[in-house]
Image (cartoon, rainbow, N blue to C red; front, side, top):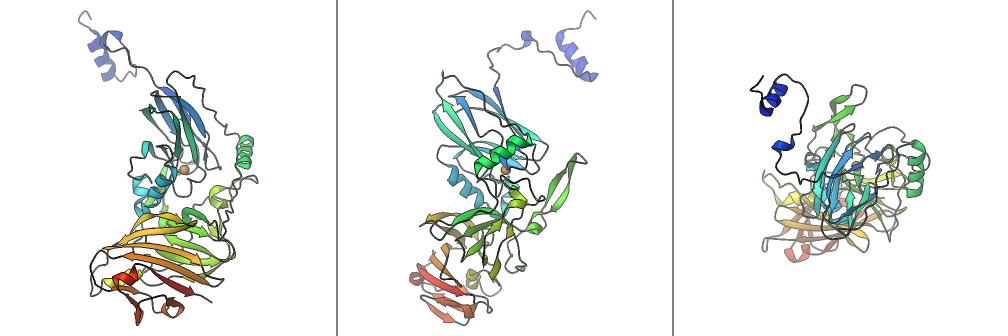
Length: 416
Ligand SMILES: [Cu+2]
């Protein structure tokens, strides 16, 4: 025993599996390491909200932040540069069908810190230094359908300011319901023609068919946490539950649309209502979820369902494999989303708005990277008779447009 130095003692402890750790001042020359201040964020069960919606931090402070997912579905946590909330949400939407494999986290310098998707029942911690610049830094969960509700703000105070402990809403049912009631969240969002309601979420897939869903990777199976078994079990394919990267827009009574960011086109249009989110969000002041399910329900009646391959496929004849459309985001044009995507050499800007009660107006701008070739915009034979164009000329089911004409044209689709 006389040769037993501290090293050997530690080694022996490891070898024998004695789980004991000795902190030895003698072996740690740098004693200056400050331990991080712990901040824990959970979720309000059934509420789709973080239980901490605001916390303070001192400039340059060292923090360990834990996202403890005590909810039923996966969540992430992204700390953002001031004023960049919408940009990051749009970039997350732009991930389209590849979103799940990237934890719905886009590549952008606007994200300062990140916690990847945390499965239910799990937690992930990160350590970071708070920015030196004082101000409000928003945080958000970019899992589809969450960002409208699941957000908060880190308030960075001066270096020597007194920082108060975060206010955590307890997960007791009473408090959670009160918070939901105050948040005015209700599961039936509504928009108007002047101020459409726009949401990126899982939307129903009313049997659109393989040509329409050409770019959906069916068959990706996500694991589900099974609380009974206490472990992950193979889940069902997400795409079987609906369109995972759709954007729903409600223009009020006459029109709701489902525009898909994977296929980059209008999927369907309906009227008589918008979406019932209660299966996903639960009901605000009224109670909990009806059951659990990502996919919203349509309210109203589908008036139009798209068919056939993407119109710009018509440029890739003779057995060529058409390029995969890539969604780039949307910008607001008079309150209406203008979707932007690339399709091979083309960059397309597309707006879809109501035109009276039984028609949809498409405003297109196709910027042709090539020179003077005609752009072919091919419609399914079943849809062609319902469509009129403001310019170009028709050859069968194809609208031929010069590069100049394609820069700005409109289509009207009538469905009565
Ligand atoms: Cu979330």
